[in-house]
Image 1 (cartoon, rainbow, N blue to C red):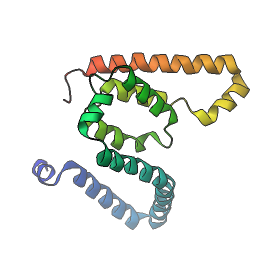
Image 2 (cartoon, helix red, strand yellow; image 1 turned 180 degrees about the vertical axis):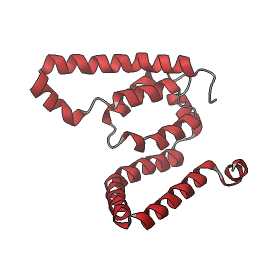
Image 3 (tube, rainbow, N blue to C red; image 1 turned 120 degrees about the vertical axis):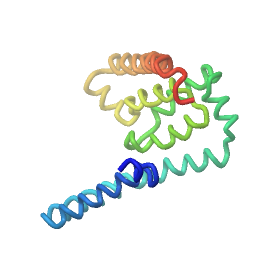
Image 4 (tube, rainbow, N blue to C red; image 1 turned 60 degrees about the horizontal axis):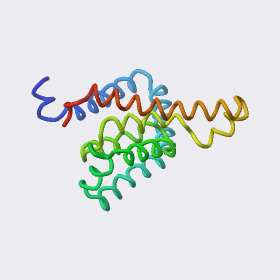
Length: 170
């Protein structure tokens, strides 16, 4: 089995195993598989627009930005500008979090710091469209304080992640 994984790749072996499991389950209970595939199709249709946007951003990033400019903006010497971009990007990003992983992985390969990735992911919890509802339920002072604390703790979280991952993956 180890040689097969080495030759073909773990992701293809996993896909093949999933297909085999689906075929076996289809033989046992075809209605269950029909329902599962229907739910899967609906999920794909729901995430497809966000997936297109994320891959579009990746395409444009590869097209218009050189690795040097990304490293300068989000790399080791990015400074305050990198933090502001990561925090703002996390706040304005939308869609499911897992849809952003390919873009962040691509940016990491081009030199984005782990701390900025962590800050981006942390700040996704601040959602601009939900702020009015939060103000309605909890009040303006609470909303402002929580948002400020989340930004501050995203920076602290990013620094901890950077320290924990220093020297790995690069």
